[in-house]
Image: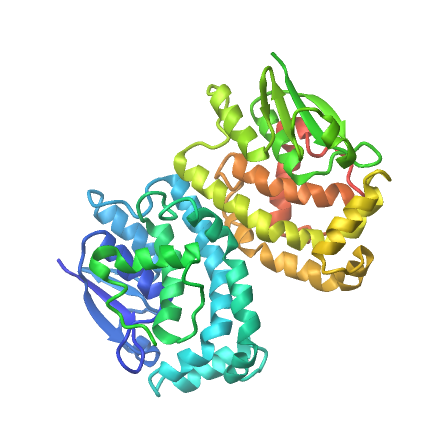
Amino acid sequence: MGYVLYDLRAADGRSFSPFCWRARMALAHKGIEPNLRKVRFSDIPCIGLGAGTVPVLQHGEAVIGDSWDIALYLDEKLPDAPPLLASDDQRQFARFLHHWVSTQLHFQIFRVIAPDIWDRLDPMDQPRFRETREKRLGGAKLESLRDNQGVTVKELRSGLAPLRAMLERQSFLGGGAPAYIDYIVFGALQWARVVSPVALLEPADAVQCWFERCLDLHGGLGRAETATP
Amino acid sequence: MGYVLYDLRAADGRSFSPFCWRARMALAHKGIEPNLRKVRFSDIPCIGLGAGTVPVLQHGEAVIGDSWDIALYLDEKLPDAPPLLASDDQRQFARFLHHWVSTQLHFQIFRVIAPDIWDRLDPMDQPRFRETREKRLGGAKLESLRDNQGVTVKELRSGLAPLRAMLERQSFLGGGAPAYIDYIVFGALQWARVVSPVALLEPADAVQCWFERCLDLHGGLGRAETATP
């Protein structure tokens, strides 16, 4: 029984959604190569599985429409593969990181790359993206974010300080080996790498070094997606 | 062999240091009532144990001069008491929270309460506190922070979103029971409670409800320190 993963695509077919990247890394962590079905934002209502967002994982009768639930599902179905969430305590940490990324890191990255996302979206997806995101920005134009990029990149780098402090002393957030907590943050930086030419981090930043390690995981799955130069 | 804890005191003798509160809660968690030695900032060089900061824990020949190391030491020496850091995974979570609190939460609280800290310091400690802290603020007067309190309190509340999301669904950051990860954040809010009359949080905020639970722990150790009304 195969796994089907619905994944968000840019106009050129590349995958950029941070949440979808979490799911793709989680599947690879379990040694699974899913049947990828790439959709645009505009296609999501047509998937026909009742999902309002992607990723959506379909596995036989099961339909899981949230990246966190996908991780739990994979750990439950594949207990013999390396765990994504190795213990209740790691799950607590993952839950905190999930909320930290959702409420802080994603927004800090969004403020830097939002105009680049728009540039790369399928034309079908562009109007709604602009409308919903400019509302979040209090009505400001997406393009106006470029004027402030010097400041927002600096704030993003400073916001990554707690990760940096850990990654200066260990290879992965999970310790010596990657775990779902790594993929939660990886998704955010991969989102930026795929859609934006802005260098979010200095090459020697411990967070960048960790990100490069993550790009090489699972046969270079993340690196195989071309970066925006 | 008793435990001696060097703790920072305000002019009126109350304990307010966030790091010292972590150590006091950690000791109480282990069922230990230390011999408290309250010092001012200015007294630290005179403790005579080579410490540059407090808390300092003295236990026989052992001198531990960092709140994190104190937690590790207590877990090592008292393996039969409830653990502060129950597993390697919880230690990773604690490490991340430690860095998150140090680099973000403490600064967000400091911007709200710094003038109140100054008001309550022993006069011996005031000049150096003003000098070092105003340097951190780029030369701005401590008192100037009061002008912006509406904004900084709002930013602090928003910065607590990842904790709030967890505490809406569980009693403690450790899950059903408190752990060192709780004390890391508790110390920060207790710091504000002891020195400042500003209400950092709304009474119905899940973070405030959790903080109230923490104040009641270990026979109400935290609540026994009078709040600034």
